[in-house]
Length: 208
Image (cartoon, rainbow, N blue to C red):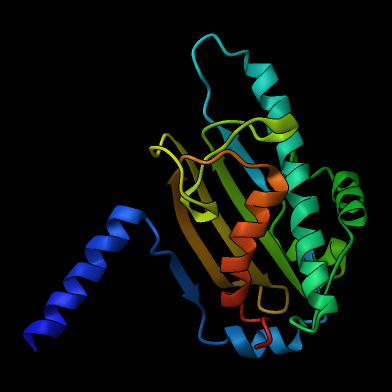
């Protein structure tokens, strides 16, 4: 019993140090709802970049918009490849179509409910995400996360919130929260690849 308690304690400490214990939520009907989903839409992620001293606010705002579209495109490409390999039975709506429909409805400037977005996009579920970056990633800008490898001291961070909502019930069925830190520079595609390898296997739509 003492060995078990000791092992459990060490595991908790290790998770705290490495920040590798993600917070994952499933609703009671998550897997049942996922089985009925034929198509999911990936909404443009909300991206926040930590502002540094003497940083132009408008420049940061534009960079966040750019990063949002980059993350959305990379996530769609990643999920589409896995869907073609048979790891997902549902389909994923093309980002260009999703964004055109949302822009026509005035989103995100015009706040919309989950039900309203579902009706506009004609899908069964919505993938929403938030990325908190300590630095921009486009055009070769460096970002560091332990998930993608070792490296130097943990100076940069990526905070991730990834959720799936069911359009029928208008409720959240899955949520994944995590924070990664490390010292290895990477690109948007590499970051998404590293994150989605972790997140996808937890999604209720994933097929073993």
